[in-house]
Amino acid sequence: MNNERTIALIGAGSMAEALIAGMTKAFCHPAHIIVTNRQNRARLEELARQYGVRTAGSAQEAVKQADVVILAMKPKDVAEAMNAIAPALRANQLILSLLAGITTETIEQLAGCDIPVVRAMPNTSAAVGLSATAIAGGRFASKEHLDVAKQLFETVGIVAVVPERDLHAVTGLSGSGPAYVYYLVEAMEKAAADIGLERDIAKTLILQTIIGAAEMLKASDKHPSVLRREVTSPGGTTEAGIKVLEQYRFQEAVIACIRRATARSEELGSALLAAIAEA
Image 1 (cartoon, rainbow, N blue to C red):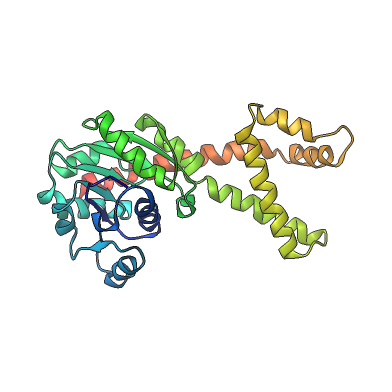
Image 2: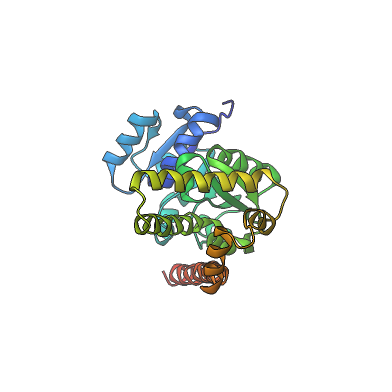
């Protein structure tokens, strides 16, 4: 941990905590992290006790001390938060935004200066250090700024750099993706109960099956369809199960799900931007 930048987190929710946990392990010393939120002082004291980070009484106080500012509040609160910290912002700071649907251009405008902004879309698996995060730089973000963001988010998983226009698609795919997997596991657990398996045994087998399949996909150069066919013997049990999934148009449902989530991200982003413009 040789990073000496001071990092201010505006917001202290679960994603902020996941980042704190990752950063204090592999990015910077806890003393270089300052956390603040709107009013929940008990939450700040909890994070300070658990991770050794510093806290601040106001967002502006935190930002004055920071080299990197992480926006981790609710997206609907961004205008209020940016109005509060704008007087303390400096053009040589870096803003990292976790705010779904809020463009880097909007944050630049709210900041009131030509400040580098990097927008990120992690997912909730950051809590266990396995997030799939995509980042995109704004107009004033250099390669060095993207490198800092990449190093930071790599403390909670893997990172891909994408054009900002792709972040809605990332939201629909990997941002919401853990929920799709959980939904599948729910169905597998219900099926296990229906066929008479004891709950704890079923859960263990289901989770290991998913972990093993993911590791196979990661380790193999083969297309998923090839791996699927290798498991599917003609006339066997897997083929019987796959035929039912095909009957229910499982793949079409998943594709429609991701497309709809992507479209909803676009809708929410447009609504947030319209609300900010009217404010």
